[in-house]
Image (cartoon, rainbow, N blue to C red; front, side, top):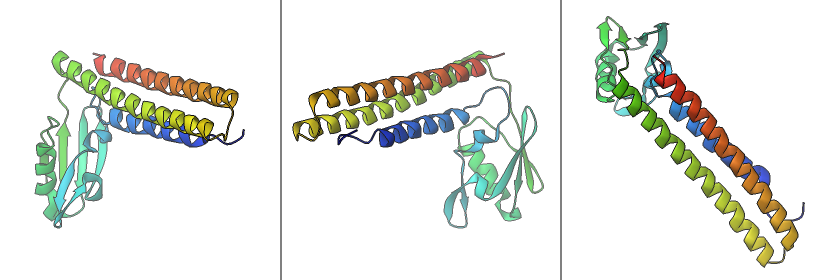
Length: 186
């Protein structure tokens, strides 16, 4: 391949969008407990806001229960407050230096709202992928205009970028379909 664009770099950036999407949908609550549910929780600790996993250990002792072992006894109330303020619909029960969080059964309305959130995450991911494609296409146009590559090479690389974009977006759709099915399971 002569000059033009770095296909591997575009692929890496598209894969990054997929990874971010996977991380986002992993934090969505299905019917089962998952430690990822608490990923967005930030605790006010030692004068700054830190992620929950830096002040406590999160476990899943039962399918509908989360367990949190806070390392510093003085942080238990701060962790409790952070979880309640995160608007996840969770109500921790303090048990000494530990917290137990029972996960309520998801009703139909809550399931549908979670599916909407998953669709929003998917759309954000697709937009990011399209931005990568646009950057690649702009690079090809510039290289062709500057005479670095010929029209045929530009068209061939452009087709590769579009094919890569289509495959990546279909991967997002596949992951979204799986998550939607998981959320709607009763």
